[in-house]
Image (cartoon, rainbow, N blue to C red):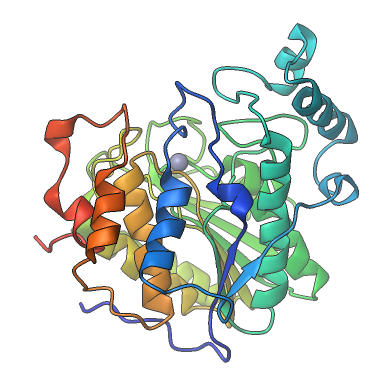
Length: 358
Ligand SMILES: [Zn+2]
């Protein structure tokens, strides 16, 4: 099936970003200490696919906004940890801050709050009947009172709250990250205006999201086997996920478009091609007049940057089948990732956006 851009939007798509996301982050020895955000943003600039005409800069959400979902004590502890650059043992245990999983590093609070600000802006702009892409969002494990799974705040929750503020009565949240979207599901477990659907790899952290996990009755989960592959994944999406959303008739859809379901991701094993995941996201965007597409996981900097750059190209009517120009190849070749062995590098990771078809 050829890749096509979504058809039912009244206004052209918008891209959300901030220079905050280009800064080095995560220190060392962390799966996210890879230049995936800067590589994607550089790639889009080198291709001239983003600029003032189609991009918006987001600002950090204020603490008064953050406490709408997060507990004030947690926001305060996080603020203090960021300011001091350290966390007490009591706060580490209580809030899961400053752990191996959720380290403290310079600029962290601003980065996390800007991620939330981006999702709020994306939801406001999507309400004008368009797709808004905020690839630095997608921190779907964040909890009201603690950090979890590399997520400090939960920006998808704020995108959904913003759409509810705008009067939406049917919002579909669809999470195609390789890990269950547990934080978002639990946030809206008693909210009939929000239908949460997550497709993820079975038997993976956080180990929730089994097929019979419906939250309080309104959520749907589709765990897939390891190495599910494009064909079985595509069948699952078209026969189960899309009908479930169509029947709900959403006014808006929020998608956590993690890149860790792709082949060669070091933290999961779903083995999808980027064409399959791109097609899925486009099909999801077609189901509602307003669409917010967020990033998420993705621990291979090459496959992650290519997926999100290709998605933006696709929805903004660029030619995603191109051979990359020399500066883009050079930039991609300069990336490094401790979790990927050099012999596992694929030639297309530095030359094209799309994976070769099998
Ligand atoms: Zn993930």
